Length: 116
Length: 110
Image (cartoon, each protein chain N blue to C red):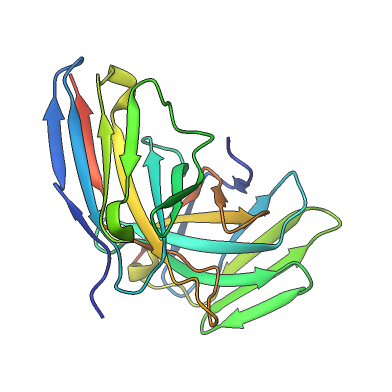
């Protein structure tokens, strides 16, 4: 079974520029999550999708961050404009949420963003 | 916001020794999970314990949960160098949202 795919793996941008991250979840996983992990901390949830609908985006800085999951499969997370404090690893995770669902989430390798 | 707080922040042991990490949380939970993160395999789910369970085992892992104290512990027995990683506890309170702690960095020396 293929895991969660993310791209790019690394990105360096200057502040005030924009950046986009892409995630392809495990096939059949209806629930998709984006997390931000700052160095030395645990991941923090930014947004949760169920199919193509948003379940929780309470911690997403909506003035600069946006995310979409068209057709309920792939997802993109965008930052515009980026700030220095956005430097972090952005993790995508997915979860099977059918009849035999569990709470276990499967994480991708992450995108390491450096804002200079 | 961080729900769980792991203790200690860092732990250094020799191969073959046991490693114990603790996690405290603040609100009522549905379940608590432990994840491992290293540069090679990213963030990986280790074990889940439900709020009505007190202890669970998986291979060399043993997890306990005390909901009255809002705390959990992860024991790794007979540690190996490959266990070197950061370990996070994560709580689930609502739909399926994970709230992670800051993690414990474990170093296992040969």
